[in-house]
Structures are given as structure tokens and as C-alpha cells.
Image (cartoon, rainbow over all chains, first blue to last red):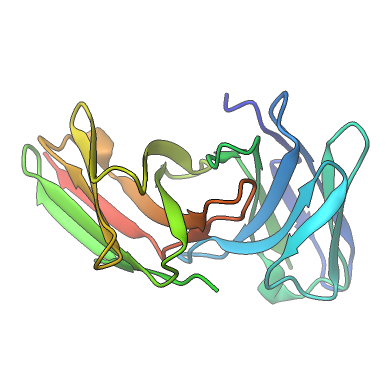
Length: 111
Length: 113
């Protein structure tokens, strides 16, 4: 157990739908990062939050959004889903000493 | 921004052999270089990291070397075992805390018994 909790582990939904992925960071970590990993692909950075505020944005689609709440958990919202959004979505958390701790991911399948 | 290239994409070795994975980075300001191991169905796990003030770091069968001048760093695994089979990612980031990691494209290592 890495200490970073992601729910749900698996999600199957239809095209056009909206889903919310949740991440609880490791205790004491203020920063949350979201990454997308498509089949046999690398880790694509989506967005970063630090203590509730957006810190950096990567290649995140306009259909996607995220937020970090006062208790530091984060949610990634994916809307108007397309088949190509099917992927593993990872959350990682960090506390400023550069190293990330990843969660076990949410596998999203869009049918 | 930072760009990290990783080679090879696939590496097959026999148990007991050594494996080397190489990465290059583009941003000379980067000074933290972690390596992650991702097993099937799991999230990436940090296995070793190196900061720019050292040239080499070892942890049992795993070592990482850094050449700042050439802007490349490598992961060395000695005496490979079947359980080393996984996808390995290198990454780089700059020295300003909480900066996002930029990952390489990954190397699939297969260790055959």
C-alpha cells in the first residue's frame, strides 16, 4: 500500500457520459498530480494541485477538469467521454522532496 | 520545457545478466532524476533516484549514473531475476520543489529464467 488511495479501481461507462475519479494523497503530502496512461503508452501529465490551488497544467483536454479540496483529496472529472479516453488514470502525491508516490490507478473503459 | 527520451523501448535478458536503460534530458536546469518500476496492473513505484550533485548511486543490485555534461542518466540492474520483469520509467524535474516530473516513454524489461 503506497498510501495514495484511488477510487474506483475500475470504471466502465458509455460514450458521452461523465465520470469522477477520486484520489486521497499520502498523509502529509500537499501536492497532487494526475497522469494518464493509455495502452502501452507512457505517463502523460494532466494537471497538478498544491494545497488546493492549481499549480501546473499539462496536456489536459478542455473536457477534463480537476480540483483539490480543503482536506487535500482531489477529483478528476472527465466529461463527454470518447472511446479514446479509455486509459489508466494515476494520481500521485508529493511533499516537496521531489519524489512522487503513485496510487494504483483507475482503469477507465469507455464503450 | 523538459523532454526526456528513453531507450531501449524493450529489453530482453537472461536471468543473471545485467540490464542497462538509458535516458537523456533536455533541460539543463533539471537536477532530480528518479526511476520508477511499474508491474502489470499496478502504479509506478519509485525504486531509486539521483540528484545532480552526485554522479552515481547504488542500492543493492540497482545503480543509477548521471552525466550532467552530456545530460544523460542510466539505470543498471545486475544479476537480473524474473521478478525484475516490468516496465521501467525514468523521469526528470527541476530544483524548485513540487515541480512536475517529466517521464520517459518507458522500457519493458523481460528477464527469462
